[in-house]
Image 1 (cartoon, one colour):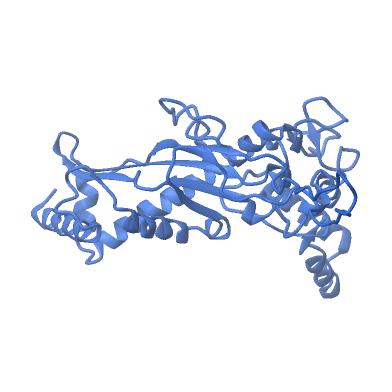
Image 2 (spheres, one colour):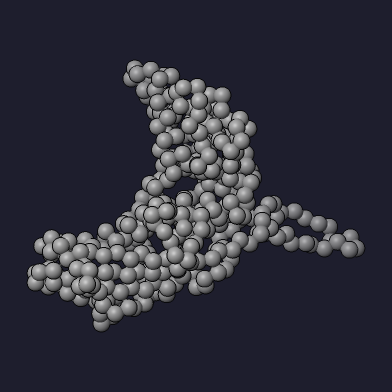
Length: 342
């Protein structure tokens, strides 16, 4: 690292220390809760999907979910003038209180001296660097939310490129609490879910309508369809071929494509290409333990780089699992054009 870069690095560390209200970031420190909340908000803002769901801070590593829903009707009356009759309250959260568990998550990064030399010319080095780190953490959170299956003591990125072993995500949460809400096989072929003509579902509309039936009627408010890019692309192609290419037909196709099965839809970034989930945004949460964020930035001359260590305790929660239905994206098969499925 040249002298110009060293000066820029020291200035960056000084600015970060001032933001955190500490003497130096080169010694391990715990981020104060008020600053931690600002940090969480900044990470959320780096995503297009995370602002739509819940990111809560909690005090404990384990506990009961923050949100819930009424289990059914609670209104009625009883004639208390009759001997033995009395008003009997109903269990508002009769679906059962769900629990969460947070796990330590490390987000450790480094910049080589060569990169520092190249970046030293930027006057906003601290802000630029912070933005890149926050964007990566935000993206990782989305990936873990959809692909996470377990929390390994030591993770293996080579074997789990989609961060499957970092934490249990939303899909896994539902698999373990309401397993029937995750479709893992169709009727046409064991172990497969076929979407296409002569399959388990003719198209996405058919799949969404059928899956939505798995959500109790009183929980069907504000539902959204989250659908993978490969499924969307195939549906667009089929619709274009069926409707032709005149302006009026294109307009009709565009209008028809605004919903699936009567519900609005979107494809979140990092969502599985063949994924299909029906739930509401407010049903998805990430919990982070207050006061658990720890950080240290230091030089590592032995490796010719600057290292940045971040850790916090966090977990993924589906507030009401009964309001979440999905297909196991690893089991989805599509027509391969040769009278088969792949």
